[in-house]
Length: 92
Image (cartoon, rainbow, N blue to C red; front, top):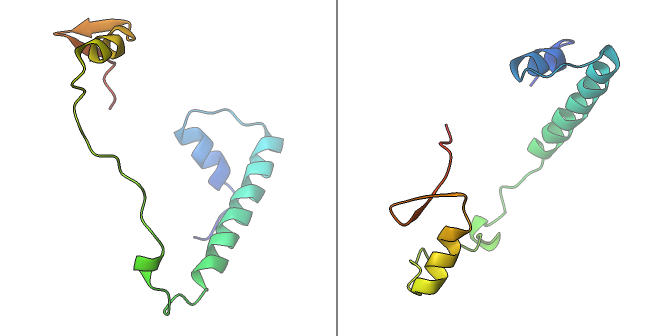
């Protein structure tokens, strides 16, 4: 990615963050450094790397809580409940 002078200001505007001119310059420099590092990584020859040897993240089995008292303790930790379930805010 080629960074232009106003990339940091544009990102701040999209996220509704106010940046001073000094902060804008600081973040532009940090973004340039970051993308320069990514560019360096993309130049590394990984043709001989076996992806299976890299490993995988541990995923726990998705098992329901069967201990009724534990389930009630977990649900009661939330401020609101609905139909014996924890009620959380909608995430969009």
